[in-house]
Image 1: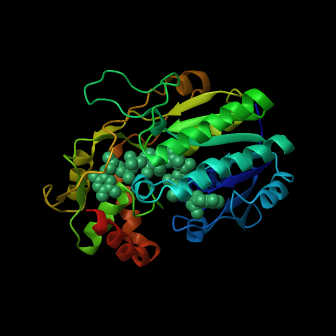
Image 2: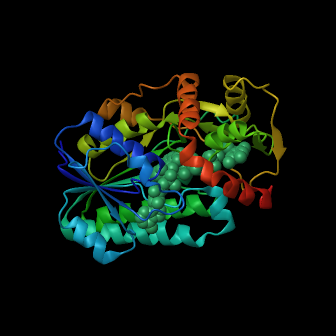
Length: 335
Ligand code: NAD
Ligand code: TDX
């Protein structure tokens, strides 16, 4: 078992990274965290509010900055790498930052992990496997061939390949996890669930792409965090673990639940143009993680999780209100 004492969390001011830092501080003693985050449009220092200053330090910087990364890695024993450009729609409009951060940024971190012999956990996505037909009885497993569809998922696939090669060639102490769609507090309002919740709150109709039948496999962000901690501390070096909570739902189904929980008619939404290259369905088989590392999700009641998530956006308007106009203006150019 590996016991992290000085952990670097890249992208820790974003959605999943910040929830992971909160989760670790609540659940683990004796570990100090340094968050390295460039505070792009997706990062927000408010996401780290309330954390103890003696255990969590924030460094404003870019993962592509080799000097800074080496300085931080020289004083740490481990790194969980969340930092990325993460939104598919943005990657279709402008792929360049995706190549820079997701591919080159991961390369810079790997070189530093190699030099300072850090335990390195790479956060990735189920999207690297492409998509499944709605009636396909199979789910993604660790052995599914890579087949990414979008500029976003192709750069995540490339970063996974770098991690695998750096393990095999240089022997770095790495693991990879590929997780399904996360939901919960602190997610950027460009993403599906928070976009629809905040649309309803400001009086805009929710927007459904295509025919609304695309399926995503939803997992609560806290369950992702507990899985990452298991893999970081108990995972076998060089291995990949898929993370999922059997949460398959069509987009239309999810939107109807949100509308109903927010006291609206389930049909009170608008159809908009489909995303180019839109993946049809994702589904994760997480048997390896469950049997080998005895991980189980504890927040599988989707309606309950959604209810809490809606409350969070209602209670934290000041965190997203300033961005709402800008996000919707951007969408209106392509919808
Ligand atoms: P996010 O967009 O909310 O946050 C990304 C964070 O990374 C931000 O704080 C941003 O400022 C930071 N960042 C971006 N470029 C950087 C750079 N060059 N240097 C330093 N920091 C930089 O993303 P998220 O949804 O929390 O996703 C986190 C990770 O999880 C990503 O690697 C993503 O691919 C993966 N993932 C996400 C999901 C999901 O459903 N959101 C599912 C599976 C995997
Ligand atoms: O307004 C919308 N209407 C809509 O129907 C938006 C923003 C999305 N959608 C659809 C597209 C997808 O089928 O909802 C689904 C979810 O969309 P996103 O929130 O953009 O997520 P997705 O493209 O599935 O990717 C997410 O999960 C995997 C994350 O953004 C990635 O970072 C992660 O790797």
